[in-house]
Image 1 (tube, rainbow, N blue to C red):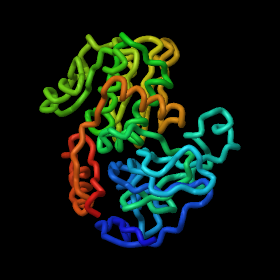
Image 2 (image 1 turned 120 degrees about the horizontal axis):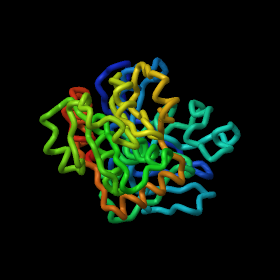
Image 3 (image 1 turned 90 degrees about the horizontal axis):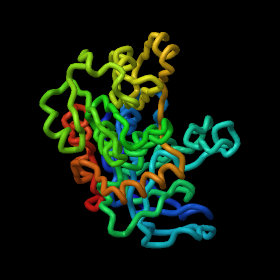
Image 4 (image 1 turned 180 degrees about the vertical axis):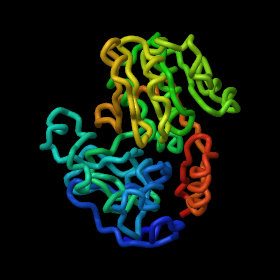
Length: 336
């Protein structure tokens, strides 16, 4: 069948309407009619060919929510009209060291066709066809626009909280109050933590506290912060004063990095003497994504998002690039 979509035809180009042919689903595949798709910074990196691996025309989109339209003959756990979600990953090799440990989100062969919109049409389209391994059932009455950004941006911030065993009552810091940072604040608050938001934008204080932060910090040199927080998650795609944030950690604490920083330079002394650590976090495993979806439903956690019709996708991307989006951009595919 013919499928309408929006694609970049060259590096950095505006997205344009296109059509492509979609075959019937293979044995273990389903076709999803996309209702909403979040716009992630990774989509923009691929549009602009920042990592020099994009193939054009490129149809972005990997924060997908939609309705099952067609199922392959071997599919038994999905049927037509199911509401489903889909994130960055659609498969794994099942053989590498990560996959055999249940860390399939860290599959070392991820580049070999296991990404939703790399080497295949993504979610900025009327329909998307994918294997069922990484498709997740959602309640029929879900706010699809709210859930869509959680399928990548949400799980990227939720996963480190679990990796580093954050518990209720802990003092938690969130560096950067953007798309990822606002998720981190909401998750920390939902877990019963005391939340410190670190930002270089004083004008964000009121809205940050409405989202759930208990404290808003613009001056990290404040000595009262030293050794105060058990867990800090950095969501900013920039270099920060890493050593000062290590000082702010309590003994045994963790600094988790999910924003793509260019360089991390840390003095070894506090890591050794106070058993502090620095780690990362990526999208979660399938079980972790299911856990997050249950958590946000139980805690009534929603995405703060701006909704754009698909024909204004370029306007949405420009607003993200300018840093003016609050806090995630979501495309409405109903008008395609």
